[in-house]
Image (cartoon, rainbow, N blue to C red; front, side, top):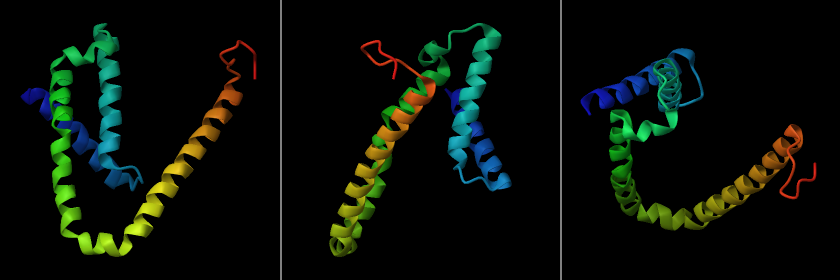
Amino acid sequence: MIRALALLLACQLTGEILARALGAPIPGPVIGLALLAIGALIHARVTGADPSKIESTELGRTAGALLGSLGLLFVPAGVGVVQQLPVVGAYGLALAAALIGSTVLTLIVTVYVFLFVKKLTGKADATGDAP
């Protein structure tokens, strides 16, 4: 478990260093996650392991344990919201409108991106007819 945690932290640190050094608009942990995924795929190809069975490895079990505890990480954010209830009360309607509006906009954009990619790739629909 220690080796897996060290690997996860090393990937995150490397991603953070790359993000800051390159001035990338992508967060360091996201870059680190991409590096971890690429490394896992390369490792699977070199060793001949099945990449879909990563959950049975030490890294997979450690990541699963961390994900199982992910809910605990939201407790401080919830406490922060409770401490700022006057601010939430003052701007609650605007916050709700922003959340609902951005959610609807995200859904609409997602549909159009899906339709564009479907048209671009020329995939047939469920009836077997070409688009």
